[in-house]
Length: 148
Image (cartoon, rainbow, N blue to C red; front, side):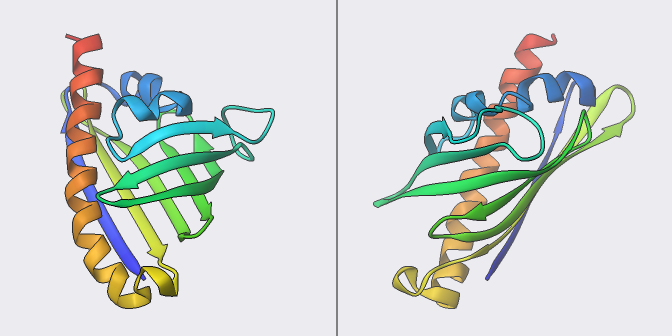
């Protein structure tokens, strides 16, 4: 199991950050490891939405099947991973004065045996943390460009 947490402070309110984060289809714009998102439910937002995310990390490609399990506007988006890699994750938006947001991304992931199981989770966790820090820089850039 890999427990991964990354965070960044964004010069925008939680509502302004949420305007970018709530559009799940656009996550590929700031998540460098996400290649494509295909919805498998009629809904594209809110609890119960399901989607497949084609993911590429180095030489590894997989389809991450996810379901949105928590949705609190401008506060929290939670997901459950039900594909080859299983687990759960959450984006949390915390208001910080003056008019800023602490964006926290937490994931708990379980890797299959063919990806090294618990050992793969430790190694994979190191790489994912680096990739997700880069993703958060991308998110921050997009949000701050919309809200100068």
